[in-house]
Length: 424
Image (cartoon, rainbow, N blue to C red; front, side, top):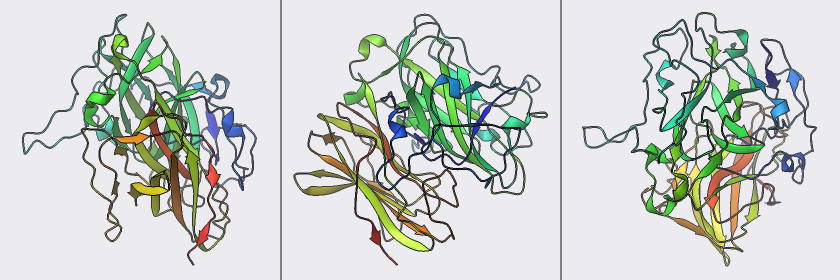
């Protein structure tokens, strides 16, 4: 079996991103922002295990089909309790998205994500993240993971101290072209980002082990006509950044459910927000703030937003600036599994609490107008002996990326870098 490993990639991160049909970034990622060295588009064909920290320049993998390799993604045949297959056959005429699979719990109506649906009992952490696929006429599941948990194959194992970025593929089971919006993401522990791409375009992604887009499958009235397209039998690329800071092997495994949407309902297409800035001012043993200002093109609104970074960035903040007025959208303090804000008429977000380091931000619909800017910054504390350069090293390098999706408006991938501020 062949598979592709990309070590310490700089902008693989299309990553960690929000779900949504987005502009093809495979070409724009080749141009680096000011202060960030451009890197070749390359990957390394690797043996079963690649040790973290191996010397390698920053690289930016393409999302093109020739940079991914099909992976064995069916669920384990030797485990009757595991999902029966990587994907579930779809009907030729998929109906609209059904009511959410999750429902409020009896005790006070608390909403809970679907979890632990497969009755897995393996020797690896994270069995509880496995979820069942949608009914065949409602959607399908794509899955990366071993066929046999007792003999999983080295490509699925992340050894203690190992860190890498691996790209594998699975093929969607829709037999006709479809529309979708609601997606469910589940990943075993050790995952830092997941980027889903198809035909050179992002079709989803997350940095959280369990995340739905939108939350709990609840689509607000203003987004009822939002959807994205997926051709029949599409190879979907899984770009996965995994690290293992434990003393036991962990397993690389991901489940993603796509729920169909009635094509007649879809009038608006989501655009990716994925804007990055240079982290090179964060030299060894420094405390700095870096950021960027992104001009908004077109009138629309933000659907979701979060900040992708690594473990040396304790704070990420973002604002909408209009006619000189700067309004906080998001402030977050968890670099490993960042807070993702849904910005719509159904979701009530709490304000951020800097004193308590509690994430929060804008609540309700966030409109955008041509001429606005989305501004963001990362507070980076570099306690290492290295100058940060933007590599995929969770403990020993950094990134600063605004991620989300919008309708009607577009935000560039590379924005005007702000003057860095030293705090030490």
